[in-house]
Length: 157
Figure 1 (cartoon, rainbow, N blue to C red):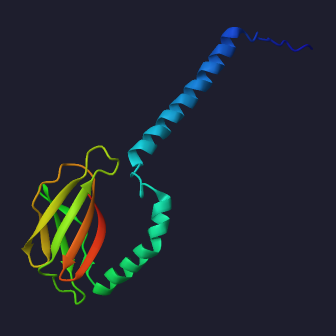
Figure 2 (cartoon, rainbow, N blue to C red):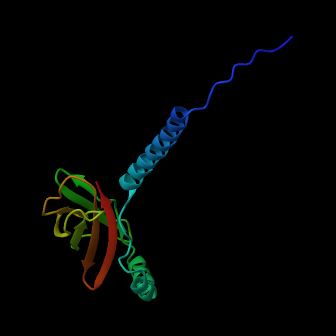
Figure 3 (spheres, rainbow, N blue to C red):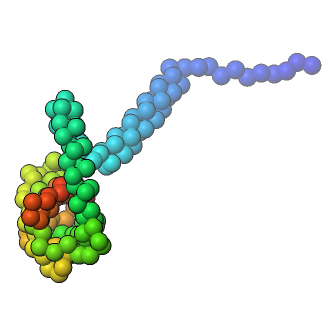
């Protein structure tokens, strides 16, 4: 008994088909990965890492001083088209009479940063005077009362 085998020829058409399929998969995966990378990129943390390393100990000292105030800053959120932030003092009571200013930056730098001032709406609740455009923003807050001050970085969407 003989087995009948049919052999197919491997032609240039098959080679072309395999190469096109391979590169289609590679390009498709690259496009998906690039999309994920761009949609999750939060921007740079510091512009110059060497300068940041020279200021690191100073920043740690400032953080210790800020922690000594005992202030608790709530998460910034939106109240209509304005930012709203609540702050409590070391006893858990509303922090009254503080001055808040902020610089709003787009995380990827699509627009120029702009300054925002806040007013105390209720004891311990501060609302921005300027409107904040729709989207994700980083707020670099400076909170001061008397000779005490605190710097906080908050995201707002």
